[in-house]
Image 1: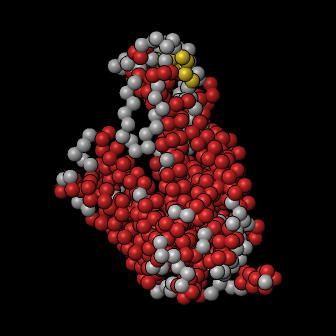
Image 2 (image 1 turned 30 degrees about the vertical axis):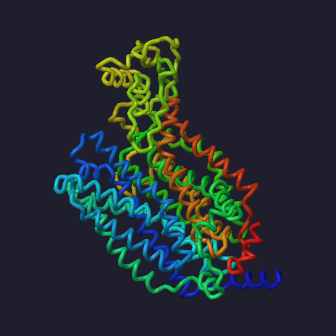
Image 3 (image 1 turned 90 degrees about the horizontal axis):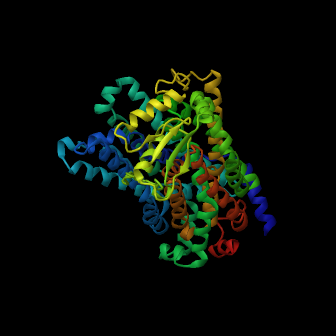
Length: 569
C-alpha cells in the first residue's frame, strides 16, 4: 500500500498544474492580497485617520484612539478564526471565504466614504471602530479558508508549492498598499492627500473586490470537503471537537507554540519592526523608509514560492525551524549594520558618547503600552522616554533608595546633570545631546532616496541587502506554514483548528512585538534590546517544534479521517 501511495505521489509531483488548479490559486491568492491590502491601509494611514475621525480630542488623545482602533483589528482576528472556521467546516470552504472577502471589501470601501467627526460627530469614530472590527473578523476567517481551500485542491507532494502562493499575499498586500499610498501622495501632493486624498486608496479597493468576488464565485468546492460530505464524516460541532477534546486541542496548542509563534515574530520583525526601526529609531524619512522596504520585499518575496516548493522535497520543519534559528542567531549583527549604514553619525555617537540616567530604579516603570492608553509621568519615565525618542544609548546609574523623585537627571558625556523635573528639561536635553555630538534633526548622514531607482549608492545597496535578508527569513518561516498547518488536522475540523493558532500567533504574539520591543528599549537604554523578544520566542519555537511537531509533507490529507488521526498520534 505504501509503495502504491509513493508512486502516486511521485506521479502527481511531476504532472503540470491544471487550468482549474491555476484558477483556484489565482482566486484564493488575489482575494487574500486584497484583504491584506485593506488591512495595511489603516495601519499606514492611522495618523491621518485619527485627525479626521477623532478631531474633537487633543492630538495626544487623538493618536491614542487611532492606535486603539487599529489594535481592535488585531485583537478580534482569533474570534474571526473561530466564527468563520466553524462555518467553513460545517458549510464549506468556498462559501465561507466568499463571505469573508465581501465583509472585508465592503468595510474598507465604506471607510473611504465615511464622513469625519467634524460632520457627524461621535458617530464617525463609532462607525470606524465597527468597520475595523469587521475587517479583523473577516481577516481572521479569510486566511484559514484560503489556505485550506488551496491545500485541499493541491495534489499530494505539491501542497507546499501550491499554498506558497497564498503565503506571498500578506507581503504583496503590504507592498501594494505602500505603492498606492506613495503614488497617490506623489500625484496630488501632501496637502491634498492629508485633506481628502487618503480616502482614494480605500475607494480603489472596490476594483480589487469586484475582480476577486467574480473569480471566487466561479470556483468549485474543495475535493476533500466534498469527499467528506459524500462519506458523511463531517463534524457536527467543529469547535467542541477541535478544542474540547484533548487529542485534537493539543495539536492546536503545539501548532501555536511549535510553529506559528516563532513564525509570527520573525515575520513581524522582518517587515514591520524593520520599518519601525528605520523610521522611529534611525530617523530615516518616511518616503525613503517605504522605498527601502519596498525594494527588499520585491527582491526577497520570491522566497515564499521557493521555500514552499523546497518544503515538498525536504520537509516543512527544517525550513520553518531553520528560518527561526537563523533569524535568532543573526538579528543583532544585522540590525547593528542597519544602524551603521542608515545613520552613521547616530551610530558613532552611540558608541562614543556616554549618557547616564541618574535615578532610583524603583521609581521607573516598564513602559509597555500596546494600545497607547498608558501614561508614564514619573521623572524616571520622562527621562527614559525622552532619550528613547532621541535614539540615545544610555545606562542607568542608581541613586540611593531614599532619593526623591525630583533628583532624577540625565548626565551627558560626564557633564552637569539635567533634571527631568526642570521646566526647560526638553530644551536642555536637546542642546546637550547636540553639543556632545549626537546628530541634530538635519543630520546629513541619514540615508535618503531621491526616487525609487536611487539604489546604486553603496549606502543604499547595503541597507536594501540587509532588509532583503530579513525578508528571506520571513519567506522561510512563512512559505511552508500553510501546508504544515493544513496537514496537522483532519478535514472535518481543519478550517477551525488551523485558523485559531495561526491568528493567535500572528495577531497577538506578532502584533504585540512593536510595543513590547519598544518598552524593552526604554527600560534598558539599548536600542537593540527589543530584539530579544523575537529571538527568545523564535528559539522557543525551534525547541518545541523540533521535539513535538511531526514532519507532515508526505501525509495524505485525502485519506479517511481515522487514518489522518492515527498519523498524528
